[in-house]
Image 1 (cartoon, one colour):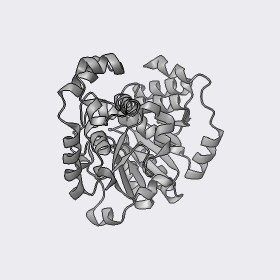
Image 2 (cartoon, helix red, strand yellow; image 1 turned 90 degrees about the vertical axis):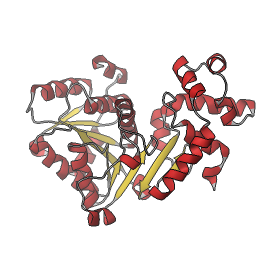
Image 3 (cartoon, one colour; image 1 turned 180 degrees about the vertical axis):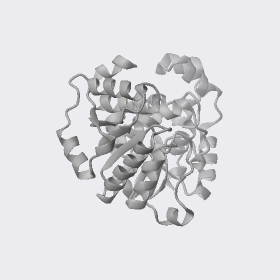
Length: 317
């Protein structure tokens, strides 16, 4: 089995090391290729050598030096994932989404953990994200949009959080298909909102970039946000504030040149403030009371022009 090769086991094990991200893994792989050495041998170098020869940061080098053998860790992870029905996809595998490598470059997750119907990855995809404490009008609008998108054959991408995310997921799953990118491991992610009999026939695909047993953490949520944007042809953000996850996702959409649509009804000053800032940066505002259908959104996305200076999204960091 391909997943049992030493390099794949090592890659899976490295993804479980706190403080070791995609860029560090890429440097380790490059050094292993150049030296003709096994990946796990390079990962076992002393911290000072990792810093000196690979220019790793001190925290990343220290994390690697303190980690357990990544081969053994990877093997143990695979054994725990098998009964959960979790599949492993590495960069370069046929099932790895090309948009991740295209838009994230060296920051693309080197290992993905997936469950559900992978055919949803072959569909067109639109992200529907938003507040964890949305207004009733925003929930209704998100459900209607997600349903329209799914009925039109478009997979709805979101982060699996309470509020807008789960409203969009459940509506899209019932209507055709949804793709969840949780900030926790897949073993801890619960597809809420659907009865057991609905889950059996719903269109779900879950894509995780963290070990299946990992808990929700703020840094993981921020990493997950850019993955959502990279997977999606357009992003619709409901009731953002000018801080938090929806704001962070919106900024990533602007940086990547993805069409960004902001839906808010002006219910709170913080939402109006966020909408004004994002529109100045290049987003298009939508009215909660008059949301577009899937086909109307496709037309708006085709007409969307990204801001001339994507780096201006840093103005409000």
